[in-house]
Image (cartoon, rainbow, N blue to C red; front, side, top):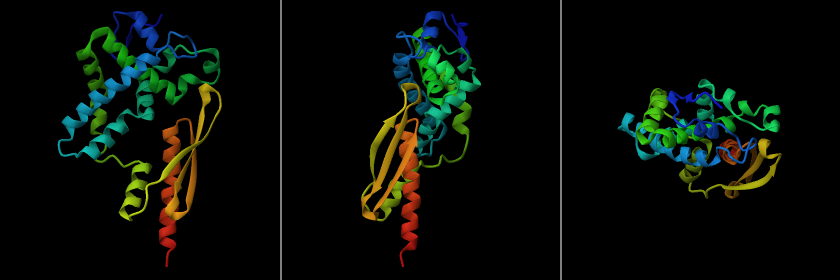
Length: 223
């Protein structure tokens, strides 16, 4: 059983901590349900921090700041810094493929741990943990850049053009190494791009980045 202290919290219920660190590849008693709850708790507490620390930010900027703080890559970075990967319980396949280093698995485990702290010690303990872990990160960067999908949408709207259409083209690979292939179509400009990534949203961002570049090039080429 895992050492009952992590993320600065000492668990009264060590079995709850073990559940939060158990990937679905290792047991049917895994962290997926905790992950669901942890995602909601993180979004709330980080939104509260962003709201407090950026009093002049509008809704759009606050949304982008929160999204940048709680996306999979950001959570995986915190998980690595806290040594979560070394404590995960993974099945043989995930161990062999290096699952303890994968962003998605680390981010999911981090979310599960946040929920486990809530279940173990209550609302205030969970809130205090999130605020301690994210307080410094909320201040980083004076401006959070817009993602590719947002930039593409705004570029099209500014020219009175229809919004892009995203479609899931294919999903390949095993559960532990799934790859999503997504297309982005700009009908008004006859542009079609594609993106591949381990998550559908990430694939859409890649396709949108390529579509925006193609749309700008198309616009610049006009006489």
